Image (tube, rainbow, N blue to C red; front, side, top):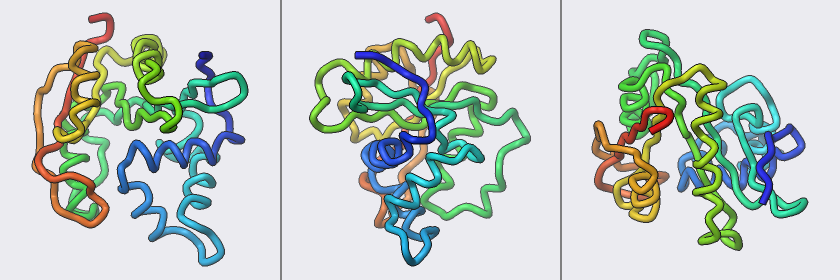
Length: 193
């Protein structure tokens, strides 16, 4: 399994994997923003192929099985303190996620980690996570952060096994696009630990 930096032509794969990782949230926003001639997935692929936002190929590393995408990790440096968007402008169900991001300004934020179903349980997520320290250093970060639904027990186990510690949480705000209730956990780890 090779790991490569994504390029614009992988937009569709990035969008497909984002729908898996985001458990409904990206699809909700893409459905709201798409053009009448587009599907939500087509809109997501277009956004992923662009370079103007955090959800972009520029922030994606892909696990490749020969010439096929097996999985991805989308991560980037969060804004420094005082540079975050206005919470009042966000939908209620997104606000807890951004509140947690604001607790770790300037950290290397792992926004999405996903594999296609055919590639699950093959260590691809762990292999991508093993490279995070190097990418965090390249981004000028000393701290790595990630959020996870507490009910996503497999992901929580993986991150804890990799040394991530819970430092905060927020209750999930109910919404049709939110797959879980319970809490959203904020986990961190220092680079090199």
